[in-house]
Amino acid sequence: MGNTNNYQQLVQKVTMYLDNELTKEAEMELLKEIRRNPAYKEVLSKEQSFREFLKSKIHRRKVSPALIQSIKDKINVPAPPNQQP
Image 1 (cartoon, rainbow, N blue to C red):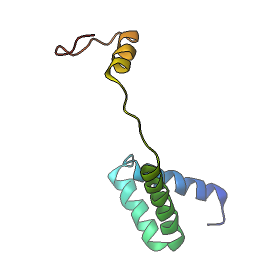
Image 2: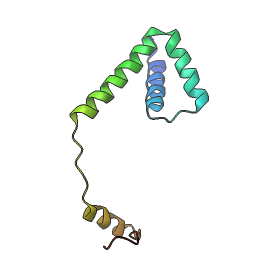
Image 3: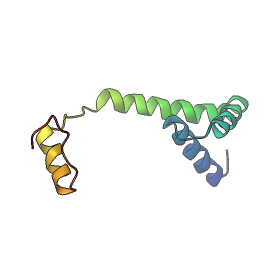
Image 4: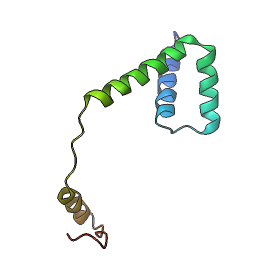
């Protein structure tokens, strides 16, 4: 994978794959490339590991319903009928 541009394209495809943003055809082609090239498989493995690390180490705070409603009010989205502002 000597070419930097090719590497960046691969990383972009892997990211899109993990985000479920590829078409089925593009996904199948990427998986074929990964099976043929161990270096490509390593890129996928590293990205998956990094994502798992982030999921396990980052604590997501809950957003309060009041904040959500405040944002909706500012962009003029009506509240659902069962909730009061």
